[in-house]
Image (cartoon, rainbow, N blue to C red; front, side, top):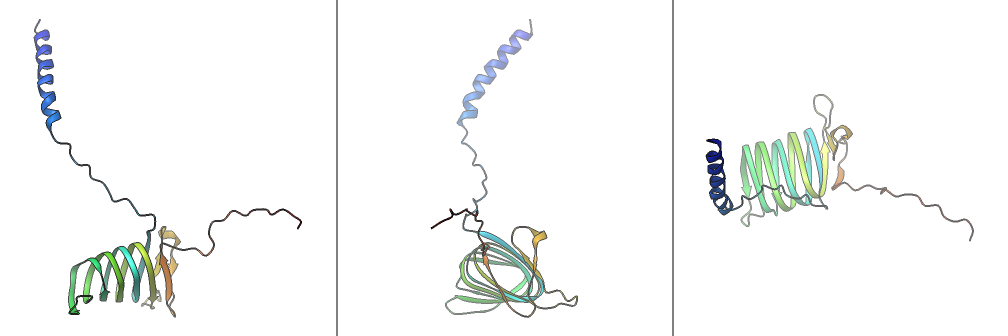
Length: 183
């Protein structure tokens, strides 16, 4: 007999609570940005060397010891660690930093140049990168890879290498087609 009044009370409570639950504003759902189809990712590691990112766009995260020059950035450059602004042109189009730490650069730029040691770079975007690796104590120059870390390539020691982001292949994926014989 007691079970019936409790079930009636539970139904009344649910009906009263229903409008309260529906009156709350919907919560926004956290979304991750959709990757752009014209963007690619490159990773570079070098114990001693230099690079230049030319006419780039996207997001670069680079940790290093040394000097970095950022030219004509439309976006933001956030240093962390012991990186100090050494010089800035009056029009703020070129900024020179030095020290040790990490930089996150987002937006579009004409050039980002670095020289130093202990560099790790990850760039998601598009543009051109020119890299030179120097021999370190272990006679290593560094390496780069696009998507798969186990498919890395060594940096050249006597010259500069120019790469594109996203990766461009000389031979596109083409299916051969048999041509009819005769004239």
